[in-house]
Image (cartoon, rainbow, N blue to C red; front, side, top):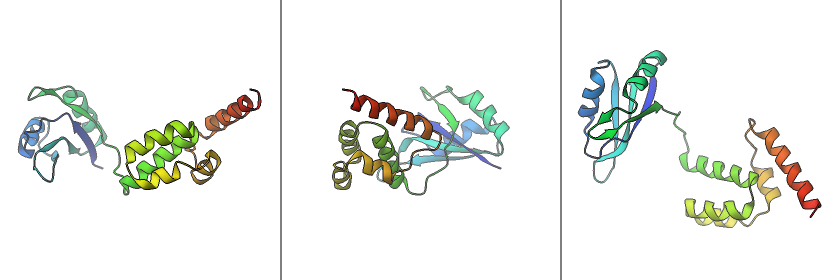
Length: 158
């Protein structure tokens, strides 16, 4: 199974062949992709490298993470799986944080980040509605429940 690695901190003036040449000394079966800006065609500062297996990925990370390439130290790590709906996922993530923290602070910072009218309208809803509509991450559900109980006892005892 192939492993995809994120390569960050790439210089703006970079061609795919240059990145490919850098990693070719490690293994010539590696495929590379430089992410470019649609308008300018210049590198956006990151790219991806695909290797054959986990062992090869670990070796490449160990060898090239922090490596100076055109006066820039490279940042290499295993890439996260690509999400299908990027915008929707960001909204869910900030809604989840809204239910676990105070609504006033989260909604104001969330509006600046998203910049759309829909999030401003939902910022006026109560905390109970937000927590009913968004399921907490199961890894944090117990901790979230403890925090809710703690907040409820603090509100009851002023």
